[in-house]
Amino acid sequence: MSDIVIRQITPEVTIFSRPFTRFFGLFPMGGRSTAVKLSDGSVWVVASTPLSPETKETVDNMGIVKYIIAPDVDHHLFLSEWKKAYPEARLIGVQGLPDKMESHRWKYDGLYGIDSSETRYGFEDEIQSCYFSGFSKKDVAFLHIPSKTLIVADLIFNLPANEQFSKSKTSSKIPFLFPKLEPYGKAMRDFVWGEGKNKDEMRKDAKTVASWDFERIIPCHGDVIENDAKKAWESAYSRYLS
Image 1 (cartoon, rainbow, N blue to C red):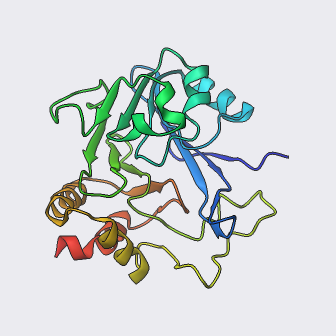
Image 2: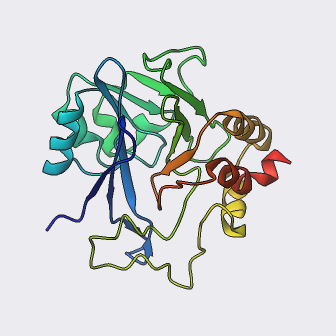
């Protein structure tokens, strides 16, 4: 039986959640891809999980994949299978990705942090972006404007990852030796502060995202933040926003 949970969040946004662990299987983080159907019928997808048969069927039913997004330097493990399946899609990543093991195989059609900040990739009328150059993993935050949905990789966690482990025999419970990374906790605030290598840039970008109009956050790791999403962001980034 498949361990992937496919859920339509809004008419335009569908998520693909599955188990994922780090640190020799001890830390259940969960993984998630997010697909967005754009107004022209094409599909924009953050490709952070495998392209399983049921994932591909669901995505294909949404439309033609036009953009494959790698939202930071760590989220490249499954790009090969997505790009092979959708060779005509534009592959958009971040500075540092072309040097990664699995990632160097593909020619990127755009790289945040390398391209001019004025570069437009074609989806900006519906999906805004904010490149966190001061964050260690060079993450990009994305806002799907019509659904008021913030989509992020490692900029915010919401653990435990209950939905992502809901079809797995592995528990989503966080072992006592690991911090419980959730938006309102000290561990999350400490994490984003520690990962901020340029505090001035982090302050600027954290404030940009805080100024956006969003009602939910879809993180790659952990449960979707369905309520009070703006408060969750402001809590996690309070040291930058004060």
